[in-house]
Image: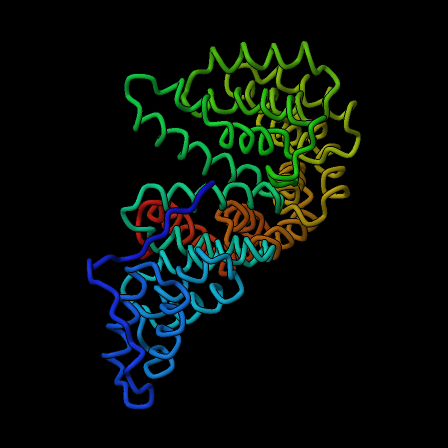
Length: 386
């Protein structure tokens, strides 16, 4: 996905600077010459001048921004990262684009956890008005979510992108989305829960990923009939492909939970170590008050994925429902430790603490749940952080 550089243009001509004595130049003179060089596409000269200007005035956000974009577009990603780190340290009004560019630079350096954290901060602060830039940031955030084991977050981001594409093509919204192969592949990776980047897709896996991506994109567009038909076609062609039955089961949960349970069980037969299918079964059996049945799958999920906080939440809730309060408290404390920013983990812990008679601590967890829940509702990808 190409990145559109966000560089301000003032329309000035580049002026030859050979006769200027560098030692006598003021900051203002350097800044003016740097801008002229940049606008005239004299990249190396612009980098040299912006570097000198930022040394004279390290607290100059605009200089760090331009220096960072010049380095990024020159594929000097380490230097770009360092420039954007300076930018976000001095910019107080609109740091969002700087954090996003920092994340994109870290992505190019394969510093993936850092990149995801920076992109998330950029999204929370706000990305500005450039739609291409926003698309680039959300796309990279989504593919990193999949790579780092957060496919549900990835699908949320990709759904937002799909709907933006549809809105931009009111005469053929579905066709526009389904023509975006990058988006479809990202959807397919997330739906199949494959911890990989689109660039890492092998020719062998590409067809099933694309096919599932089409179904996930149709879900994003709220075409559930079309998505159901696409999933059925996928199952005919790829009946034993890992992840397909899980993705179909997630789709079925809303309208046909009984059939969804069958699909999750089928997924476990194909992929014996599939923890997510077990988590879904545990949550569904909790919903239907079949606590003992759910407990089996939740315990297996915790064993297979000890760092998955949702597994601990499901296990803790089922233990609490069966009256095993002490063990439930241990599981839910672990969930909060693994995901301190999860409202659900804090809410579940507050319930078990209240059941255990630890009223003051339960109140604190409930308050934290309410704080995090309000924060999540207010901080949409398009809204500035509060």
